[in-house]
Image (cartoon, rainbow, N blue to C red; front, side, top):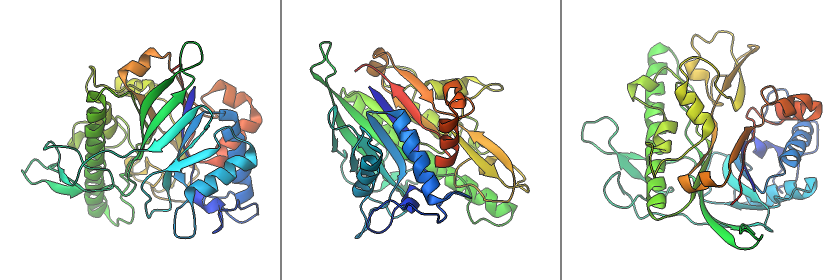
Length: 365
């Protein structure tokens, strides 16, 4: 079985208000990319992935007129994808929804949010992701409210035909995320940039603590868990990490032991102070950027520069029992993956389709 996570930059801009695909020469939400070119590239990439399920970050919008599921299913039907059915969770107002495209012949998916009412971290049941959680991040004894602009998508998945004879099922909890960016968007001057960057990192870390608390609850209940998506973060990714001692990714992974999640790319990044670190995203940065730390996410500053910056932002984390299912991870990077690089059509499509590259997990449930 193959599970993927893919952040599609401004997927929303490729559909009209009737959720029809925008096959025209208008500009897409991507810099210097036409809508029909991005659509064609995405069709090739999704087809090449041939995944049983793709968690789509920045999926098309849901409004009174528009439907994320209708748009994604129209996209899947146009390109003849096996992953032809879409499911979403709590909608948001960012025009960047979270959704899963999956093959209904081998996977059954239900939006299954867990949690009680609003509360304080560490005091009782963790609330649902569309509510508010109070967390003391400053160590001053004051628990301040935290919320998600994009509430994580919690799904109960039934993986069919996973028995040794091709029958049977396996139940898995999936949590898809797009954690808050740390970039100080709109800040002017060094002092405001510093203030906003620190404040945004606090919010990002708070969201990861909330997510970690839910993961612990699920795993203590005996569930197999997959956490995947765009964390806008990674070990050593910016200069503010030292203020809090660890990255949000480390928080969600947890300590080694029975409640630990695993992702080999995160583990490699954690082990490296200097050396090779995988990358799942590639961004154009401005010529006049004084530092790189604030440009390390897709929400970083735009500019006229022609320099590229790579970052590890996208992960597929699994619980210990799933590590016994012969897992194999792959980043579909057009320059770092040999098969992607030598397939010229796929290489070009990956560069045209998004500023992120897909990550896949193959396993035998």
